[in-house]
Length: 308
Image (tube, rainbow, N blue to C red; front, side, top):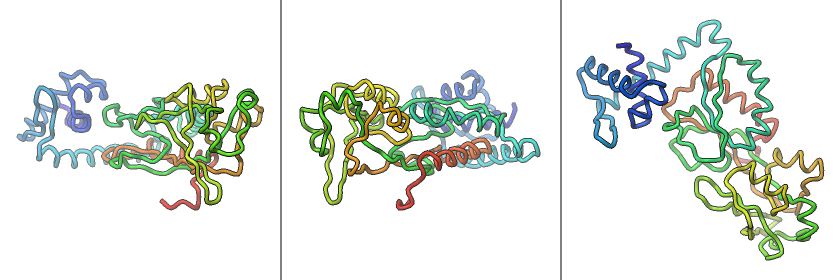
């Protein structure tokens, strides 16, 4: 038995709650993972996991052992990356998940510079606006907009997206240019509805001017749960959009989108990078987080007035 392989297998079973899922994330067979954990228990002469036909639960001894194991594995990773070449150039596979518009417009175009700095880091990037279970999907970190609802995650605020309201010239020619946000709640206008993955409900932004605030419900003929599809629907003239600056800038410059109601403001949307609380922040994850932070300073810095 390779003791470290057994520790990795045990730790991943605890994190995923499943031998099958642990095997998938470790690229091993379920039989191999089962045997490694059994051999580890035999060596320690203690039961680490309680197994039933439906689920796997960690025992009290297993929970205590897990806390020590993850620290030991983290120290081993640090020891390897502290070697001269590894310290200078973090290496390995990094699994991340990011929103689709952010990937297309911000992250992917900047990746050549990241790769030039860290050529030995391999990125496996999930691109979606869905809610990702970091443990079950063996994801190292996620980038997400909006307030985080999973308080168990470790999170770092990396930016504040400044939002504006936009529509195409064709749409405005048909529906008219709104002079007040309340007009967007009337039958004269449509919005493109964006469905939050975490709730399944449509975004209802609040617009403010001085002491007045208006919540926009709006009628829609299309609702979507993907940022790229949301933008495409607005560009097709299907309704009014709420967009962060980085998504609207190019289309405003070319005249394909027209900013509306400039006196009214929308609360900035916070952006976070989050990772599991028990996941060691390896050298490769650390440099990726710092790189994303620097990238967001250019595109959407954290508003100074906000208090973390």
